Length: 168
Image 1 (tube, rainbow, N blue to C red):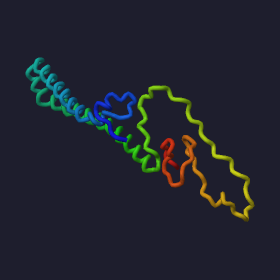
Image 2 (image 1 turned 180 degrees about the horizontal axis):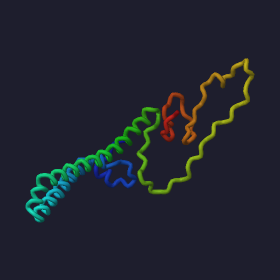
Image 3 (image 1 turned 45 degrees about the horizontal axis):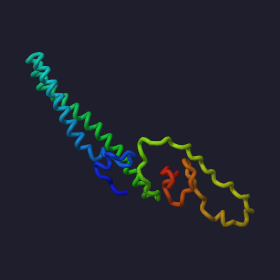
């Protein structure tokens, strides 16, 4: 899947591509400017109240408010970017595990979801053969079915190729 440009992602109403990862640096710069302006206003208000409070705000309260604000914004933006990186890593694990490369699922579905898929029950086992003669079915590996969607899972796959649920 080819990555989309900024404006293509911005006006992608299906939300199949994200712009947050492209804007995170700009958001951090804007946050830094906003926190600096807030700190400056805080110091000016303290100076207006009294010169002693202004000096206290300039030397102690202002820098402390700025550092705490920057830590808070950095943590929030890092958490946001981690969510998007987890999404990318899960897709990559799905592809490596034998899944197919599916388009991103929209975060907000435009149309209501249909009924949940009904799990497919494995076929009933045939009657047991006499114990002294092994059958072809007894020698063949057992088939695995996904616990989540019921789809058959090919031998050696770690994830369901239908829904991406881990096997095991």
